[in-house]
Image (cartoon, helix red, strand yellow):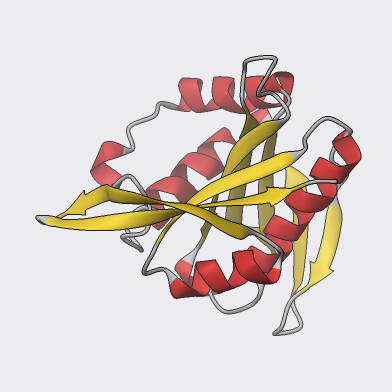
Length: 180
């Protein structure tokens, strides 16, 4: 279980971290459509993100039931970041899972990514069942890689041609963190 928390940001603002609620479906949809157009580091473009409000409500409702985390980061009530963590579904691999993180461009550089990932790590420690956190990050996303390394993630491999944008291939690092 994740309890609502607050964290101080570099600019003095307060980041509120809380689990997504079904009532957040419209807000999260708007947010995801926005951030998908702000960077090429995500695996989807705005026109490819066509989830309905009904489906987004279901996703949020089901997320916790699968033992995952759907975490929102809000600054002055405005959605600044979303982190999702989903454990693997098979019994032999359910101790591990992968997360995805987005931060709205107008909030870049404030330390939000660090706070969101640290909250995930703290939550994972508290579960007693999550023992490994994985992620994929583009090899040219230096800012994200620096955050992950600072928090203890190790580079565990290279995924070549992981993304294709306008005829150019981009590779991913597979990074992981052991939860002891």
